Each structure stands twice: as C-alpha cells, then as structure tokens.
Image: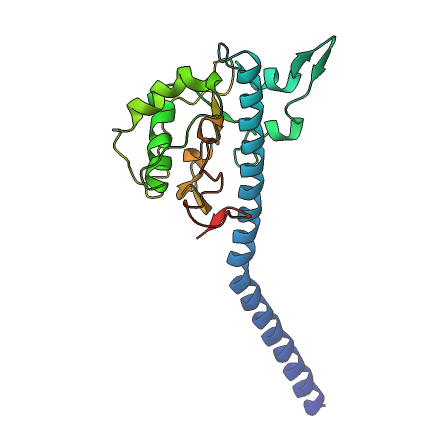
Amino acid sequence: MKDRIGEKGMTLFAAMATMAIIALALLAVAPSIQQEIQREKEEEAIRRGEEIADAIRQYVEFYGGAKLPNSMDELLEGLPQGTKKRQILRASAAVDPLSEDGKWRLIKADIQNLGPFAKRVQDFNRGLLPSNPSQAFDRYSLVIVNSLNTKSESDSTDPEEIEGDVVTDNTPFIGVASQSRSKSVLAYYGIENHSKWVFTPLFRGSGSNIYGARPGTAPAAAPIQR
C-alpha cells in the first residue's frame, strides 16, 4: 500500500516538474513570438502607409498641385474619370494597424509636421534629399528646403514625443503617420519609432528607397530589421 502511495506521489511530482518545464519554455519563447507579431503589424503598417502615399501622389497630380486631400474619405472616394470614379485607395489601407482607434495622423505640409522627417531622410541618405516625384509637388519644396537646418533629434529614445499636430480628419494633408508612440521593431529610413514614420509622396525621387536602403546598395525587399 505504501509503495503504491509512493508511486502516485512520484508520478504527481514528475507531472508537476514536466508542467514547470513547459511553462518555463513558453516564457522563454513568448518575447520572440510577441516581437514577430509586432514585426508583422509594422510591415503591414508600412505597406498601408506607402499605399496612402501613392494615393496622395495621384490626387495631387490630378489637381496639378493646386489641391491636397482634406480627409481619408476623399482618397477613398477616388478621382473623377468620366461619369465614374477611379479608385486610388483600398479601404483596408485607410486603417492604421498600430493605433488604438485605427486612425492615421494626418501630416500637414509645414515644417513642424514634415520638417523633422525630411531631415532624417536627408541624413540617412548621406546628405541627399530625393527630388519630388513630379512638378505638381514643386510648391511644397520650400517646406523641405527650410527644414534642412532643423536639428535632428533621437528617433528611439523619446517614445512620448509626437512631432507636429495630432489631427486625424478635416485638414489638408500631404502624408500620414501612426498615432502609436512605441519604439519599433523595424527601422524605416533608420527611424525606430512609429510616430515618426511619415508616409508621403514627397520622398519618391530617383535614388530613394522607401524601405531605407542607402544609395549604392541593393534595394531591400522588406523594411530593415534591428
């Protein structure tokens, strides 16, 4: 009888030890799983942001540079094409996967909102700032030129900072950024902070790479990972 009780006790101890080992193993892999999930969300955010940047490009070029979209709905409605509308943006791209409410922060065409990002792009490209995608954007070039002397600050050490206004609707905008203030897993133009990734058609000239590859290197197939 005592032997059976002893065997049951050993079996229970072995089961508890096994469960403890499994729990420790799960704890060990949890951070890497979480990082992979975050990386996938960031990749999707970059894809959607770049789609919005291209939709803005089409919108601005259609109106000859005289008009910027005032809301995400304007991009979703598309552009006139005869008696119909030409779609330039998917509904899914209008949702920011990194922000809590799914709304993108709209970036105005001014130095406060766009200047710091322009300076970071210039620094990352070894002093070169890509040209405008077309003449329709020439009127906004002054924003970039004036921003070249903007002091560049850390992109990853101050997660609480959001540069510019936090506006999500009803304002002329030339780009979008996430409302998330978190430090990122991926780097976009060398920037490792969600709120400082600006998706705009202004940096689409020759020699630039949207995923941040430096001039003279092979284009990256995906954003740079730390």
